[in-house]
Length: 206
Image 1: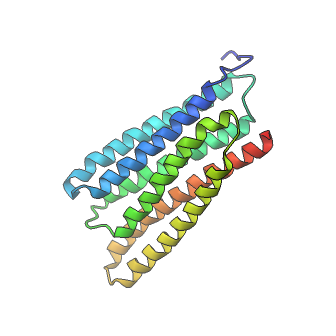
Image 2: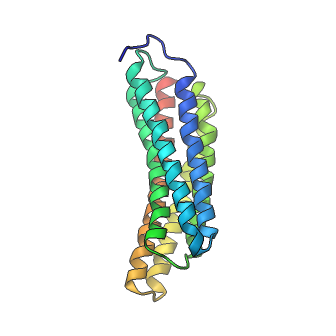
Image 3: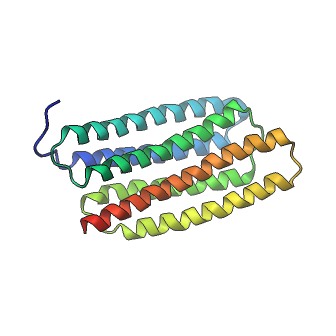
């Protein structure tokens, strides 16, 4: 594959913005799944899988562009890492949706909806921040708020675990729900990892 001396200036930023838009769509689709009847959940999980595939393609497009560009807008290792971290957010949300369907979980604790509300907000903030990588300006509020939301997600996670273990549910139900809750908590952690990576890039480029 031939190397381009100078990449199209906006292409990397456009692809990062596209990746983050998939995250917004995924978080909102996950919200719909939680509000759906059990019989309807499978269709929403399938939509999540389609979004996960689209996110994968955006990630691969970024990797291909890095590999075919002689000059990149910032350190290529940071580009690889950020693209991979964004993809992790989608993978974890999609996995949670898939588990709800595969495990044939019935009623979901209200705390799971609260977890997903946090993920929706994190995805929106991430999508809003990605275009600002172009100038590396006005990003500090983004990573500060993501950190606050991740702390909120941690608190919700602990509350959900306590509820699971204290409400007398059977062991199999507890295990199924815990795995879903764990994936949603990991998704919140992944969004924070994206924000930390953006902060690191901004510091390097300042």
